[in-house]
Length: 353
Image (cartoon, rainbow, N blue to C red; front, top):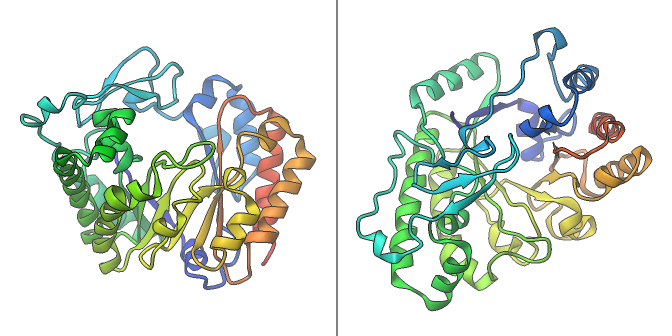
């Protein structure tokens, strides 16, 4: 497994506010969907939406392979020694065993080697180099990524969420040693992608809850922001675009998250508020909008879905660019709503064209 994908010139133009031909749109189907929906129903929808699924052919379609940590009832130990468990095939579960829950284990603890692992699994840098070269031949631009949860979340996986917050509150010196270890590991990955010529580097993790962040702004500034700043520097220096992601309500952290090194921010729409996003982020950074999957697209009808996506494009978009949109499909969304989301994303991608 690796963390490399590719983007087009149009996406680069959207991020750089260079008048893209259309709003870049992505429709992600979580692997769990393939045992919650009839395969043919999803395949047919994909075939009908060539903008979201370019080149897709039902006859050649294959089901995605589950990651090792996405198998229900099969605990998985990642590269750091954290044990993951899930109750639904295809859904990333949670860490149930924290290798550093007891600080006494820190003395003998060794972080994984970024030349061999990405945090969750093994990494093949030779294969990634080949993928980057192949993408370049197709006129695409490669994107590297840290693991989802590379800083704050990785620390919580190692220590446990509550214990990590106690460590921050107590200003425990051992926490700084652990932070250095986590940062050093991620730095090795960032530098490798930068050296291989990646056009963009992703820094994904979740910092928000349904209401408010998972740590205070002061804790973020003291312990996590320096990690972000240090990890972004080699990418920025190499000319890579910097993309950061967080689910949840991150309004209290945005000013610290969005700096001169950040080119794109992926955040959730209704949790943070469309008007708030427009007032605080439009024109300041490329907004990579995560379309609601809790309320309207789950429980509303096609008309409400169309209204939502059109409103978001009108309030956050611009002919100059600065807007991308992504929707993550998870089990439970009615098929007619899935189609409505796909229809609206394709319809309004050309709103400013």
